[in-house]
Length: 238
Image (cartoon, rainbow, N blue to C red; front, side):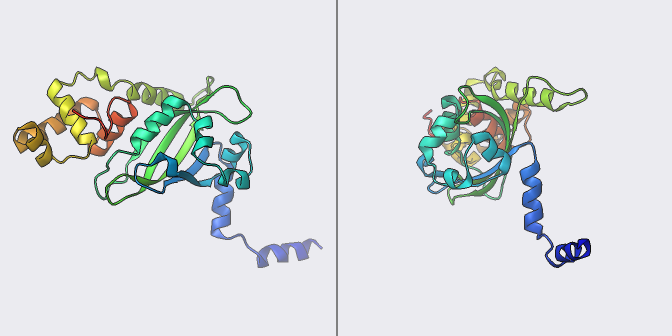
């Protein structure tokens, strides 16, 4: 009998997709893929994939979750974080760049009366033709108050928490703040120079100074930091 069972296992091996899904479902993190149907429209925001940890936290089945709309997300996500999410949908990403963005989010399930704090690492998978977000892959880990000895993850998460709120303390000059607003709106150095009546080289110098002061690697990371701070939006007027 044992031999027959072994033969059946060999004849029906798990597919690569099944193995991957099993691994993802076993991870102690919520992993999901979200998509926006129309550029910048949070009402068209919907979920394409959610792993088992996500369903367990939210407290519903896959069938129940697939029928949820933006009103359900408004109940799950803290209003301030949802506002930041809506702002981020207006961010214009440079062509060919798929940045990873670290952010925090407060989420609660239908069985909780309080929010849990999550550290989210978002990777832009796809953008619309105008550069705004279309599809994003997210790994969300709950931030616990107690961390096991030797675990260095929490300090780095706390550092990211501080970083999101520190942008106003980087001592940007008034001109740099103007340039940053235009960068978030997706303006090029040529367009910035034209709008602020400065040379292209000066516009480029301001951009480089902003990146250096913010201690980020590139323009995409600078835009992400500005948007996550809540102080800059692609819709802002300067």
